[in-house]
Amino acid sequence: MSLTVLSVAYPFAPVSADSVGGAEQVCWALDDALVRAGHTSIVVAQAGSSVAGTLVPVPAVAGEITDGARAEVHQAVRDAVAEALLRWPVDLIHLHGIDFHDYLPPPGVPALATLHLPPSWYPADVFLPTRPDTWLNPVSEAQRADCPPCAALLDAIPNGVAVDRLQSPARKRGWAMAMGRICPEKGFHHALHAARAADVPLLLAGHVYPYPDHQRYFAEQIAPRLDGARRFVGAVGMDRKRRLLSAARCLLIPSTAPETSSLVAMEALACGTPVIAFRVGALPEVVEDGVTGFIVDDEAGMADAIRRVAEIDPEICRAAARERFDVARTAARYLDAYARLARRAEVIA
Image 1 (cartoon, rainbow, N blue to C red):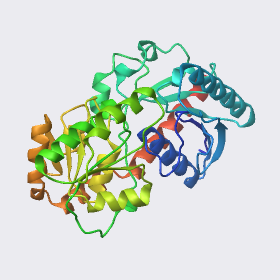
Image 2 (image 1 turned 90 degrees about the vertical axis):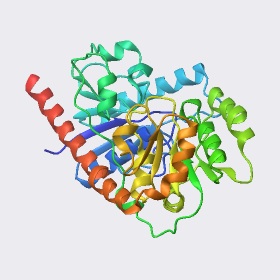
Image 3 (image 1 turned 180 degrees about the vertical axis):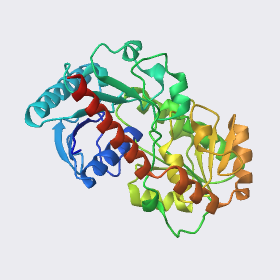
């Protein structure tokens, strides 16, 4: 069955192979998988995105993302989706943004929304969809368990990463690594404290988006804790990410939010790097405590785990990534879901 899928990315971050955000990385991987499988992929995403299919761009916000800027972008997304539905015989719409309910198209083509963030971060009415043929899918069992009862909720499709692209012969170095969006819920100040307590260097990589609370968090909680041994290296593309993760002694994930998944943890394991993570959300599903890293409860536990990380075998980490986290498996499950939902809509029609 040949499919035409319209993917709608979160409109405030670009989609590419080097995307920082997990939702954007998943959107890019599925677009790439669709094209490789011979399907037609259309992607509504921020201007400047790089996709395998056809890009329908929406303007990027210049400067701070205010409520007014958000409203303008949402209207641009609605217009872009309407344009795409007129130009192509779309079989299914796949939405990735936390704000997808603000530009959900009128009834017609079936729609699937992936819940990339904790269920409590979405408006309650997201779980009471009135639009026909509108479905929700979580990305982990922990996230699904946190969702309210919902007839539109499908089985979880776990995320994955390009394991083959992350293989590297890099020699292990002394530093710990932390990586991701620089924002309060990621808790990177805890990683800085833990690394200092363990007396190890730390490299923090990531992007500070132009949200006031993100910028304030960096200025007040991150910048004052940086020094010669604990440095911020900014956003990194895939090649540099692979080199840094492969050389790191461990990856620290001190998130204070109930993580729905963790692509960076999967990437680290694919690089043969153990992961030390707080016991929140789906992180215990990703990290096997004492096998591919450690699950800890606080900064003191993280510092102790940094000291013990030599107990973890890098080859076991790589094997776990190959067995559990290959993005090809994730893409195959999504393509099956696309076909199933498109066929269901045809039967009902």
